[in-house]
Image (cartoon, rainbow, N blue to C red; front, side, top):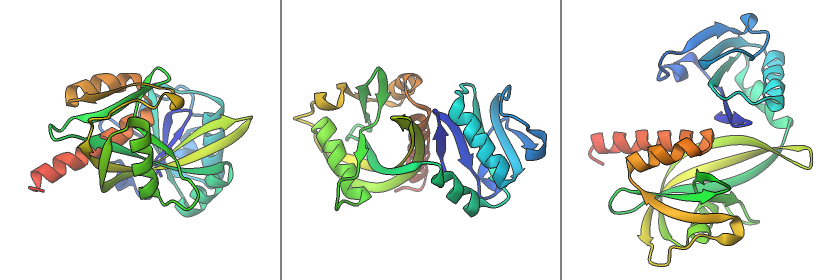
Amino acid sequence: MNLFINDTPFFLLRSLDEAKPLKHKNIISGEEVPSLQHLTGAVVIIDVSIEKSLAFLRELMANHYEDVSFRILPEFYNETKSLIREEFKIIDAAGGVVTNKEGKVLLIYRLKKWDLPKGKLDKGENFKMTAVREVEEETRVKVKLKHRITTTWHTYTIKDKPILKRTKWYAMACLDDAGMTPQKAENIEKLAWMNDEEVATALKKSYRSIRHVMEVFQQQRQARVAGGA
């Protein structure tokens, strides 16, 4: 579960193997962590009880930790995930990473941050339908749906009510960008096609959840190139 609390990664792991790609990670036991304060870097906390997982969640809801990411290996994954979901109202959304023939990625600039086009499901829609509709509405770029990239969960608050948004992300190919225009009604100021170097620079002014989506997308793209796909 790729969960972002106040834009801080708080991923639930099914096994410690999921943390293997992390470099310079600090693995500690849940019994040794009374609080998440003062931790830095890539932190993996193992053998975490349901009660302590929820305590960590509430601590993150009340604070913002910038220079740290947490991977939690709970003692009971499914039960912990279910109880975390019960803490929030769930909203479903979908979005896309669009590439053109030159391999450039389409980013949107909204609320002073570079972002990816996305939006909430309308009644009667599935995630794939929403992803295509939202991308085309927010950018006026015609796209073709490809494969799913990942799913992220991130929190925010509306009228003091905690919201957990589940967003499914899809890779897309640009079919036609002749009418490319930012959707002003959604506070999108500008759109830009960017190469990998430009994307890396832009993502410094983005959300950590968006950086995660792009990391997974780029890993998938590299794997497809290596496999000759």
